[in-house]
Length: 450
Image (cartoon, rainbow, N blue to C red; front, top):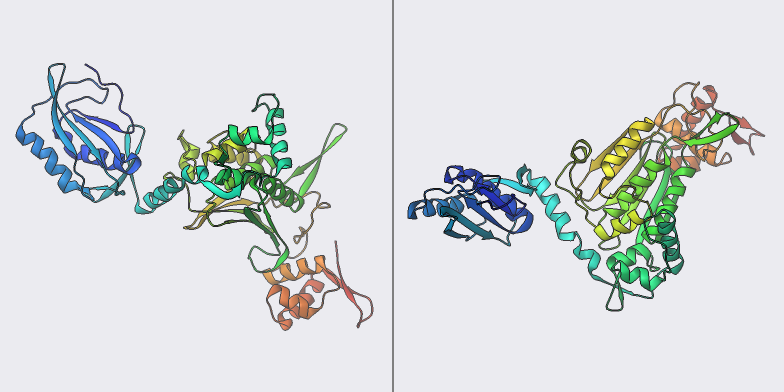
């Protein structure tokens, strides 16, 4: 007799000689699903081989559960006869996760038990608590509080890229088809995707240095996800370097960070965020890097590099939001964001890193150092053939590029330095050939030399 394959809620052990391993499986299944079944006397392939079952062996299993699984659970432990062979069946459940086995924590993945750290477990439960349930819940916005222009743009784009069949669509059809309305109200997913209630906040800034100290520009937008994705993409592309390449008779403008990389990182940032309490996304453009911050703790038990190296099924915090972004190719391959971003960055020679915190996930894209054409760059504070600048000099130079007529006192306020420090930076920039004075002493301005 064969009981089939092991699953995320079903585990087989050949005998009670594997009782310790059985306890690990119980804890990992409880942590992932809260309910499961374990058989002793069955091979991993499902073949029933049986084992000696007595009152003593049943007590051994009960004692092992009592001594190893914390918090305490009360499983049903019974002898069963399958095709003439005796086995022990353990049915268990629990609502007080996380559960440990002999003081260690595990999570179930397919038919394997994977040990995790308390931090990973905390991240997993934080994501699981939010995953799916929040999206389907009713928001405070009535179903007519939608940006109809945005929904029309959505379905036209989805049809044009071949991920939505051609047909006659209306706003109500889209909202109902994808479960974005309930009881006359938008669901939470519906509001953040298409609402006209300004449900999501995006803050973007350009900084003079790699420190978040002197900003040259700052914008704050409140809109829905669909519109903010385009706003964010446009802002980044406007304020990074572009180079020109001539192919035959054609001139092609190429950004230092590929558009496909920017789109994928932005889409995943919005797809995996936690949207409770009107959360805030953040984009920072520095001379050496672009950072994209997504609010809410990391949404998976696996590290990003594990998704890149292995074929692991993605654990989506907001599956409905991700699905809608996939339909417009904002997310190119459903559930494979890290692997795709890594591939795109490698192809383009773009270095990247990430920073996981309790409150959010920051993706860092490092900017290239050799730029052949900076004519379209809004703010450029690097010069290749001159003496290097310290952080203060870079900040002062960036402010002067923005406003050549600004006073020393105003510069000092902008860069959070004293007037004397700013004066020293101005003298140094002049000596290094970055700037010069223009005009009479009382009414002079600074000219930034190219």
